[in-house]
Length: 105
Image 1: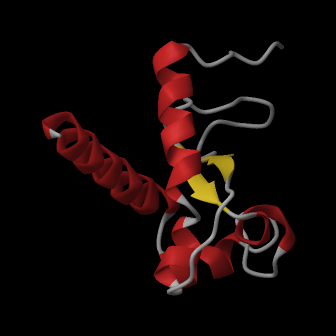
Image 2: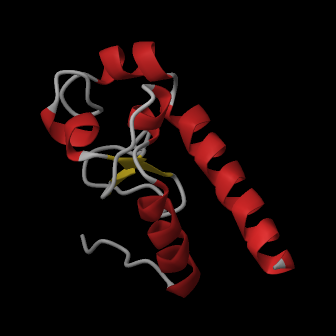
């Protein structure tokens, strides 16, 4: 099954999310750039990708290589930082705020 490629608006949003910096590092009081995009996979099944808007900006350590990462230690990650959906909502709201502010100036 071919994976659906992001459309223009999804690509723009994904770029903004990647430029945001790692949300987990931010919570830890650290700055982390560059970021990888993590697609939140709840109830999507194997091989099925969730929408390109259900994403998190994560550094490599918090995404896939660290002990507390969404791929190697999902429960530990969510215990420390909160549910992935809540983090995605937080990032989305901040990006929307920045878009409003930048449109004013």
